[in-house]
Image 1: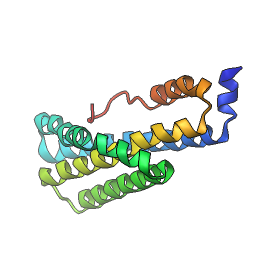
Image 2: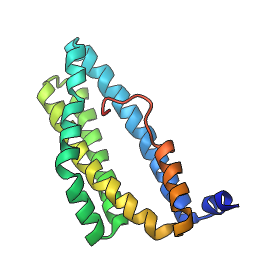
Image 3: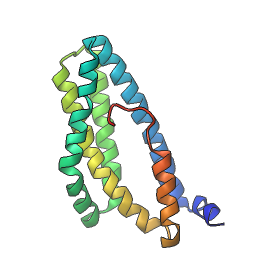
Length: 156
């Protein structure tokens, strides 16, 4: 009964669908980036280093993201963070089309994606509390966490 009510919650459903779409895009981006860099560098070691800037950004900015999510509109922060991540992904796509192979550029791009992800996730937590009744909060968190847990990603 509680489960079906959650799926009838329009705000939760929109959040879930938006994040499902974003997750698919993230996975496609990650796959394409890894493939391109493997072709460009011929180095598995270089690929393993790609996760470091994003994790570092998370460590540095996650708390800031939490403060911003508490002070500002979480929906605006989520949309802004996703648009910024899309912009970085498009820039990376343009640079790969131009044949850029400087690994430092891709490390910087991953750092920026980590910064924007660090803004998004706390905002999602705050937004979820506003759109889901308290008795459905643990179930909604479980659905979002299991839906968006990537199987394979350079950001692990």
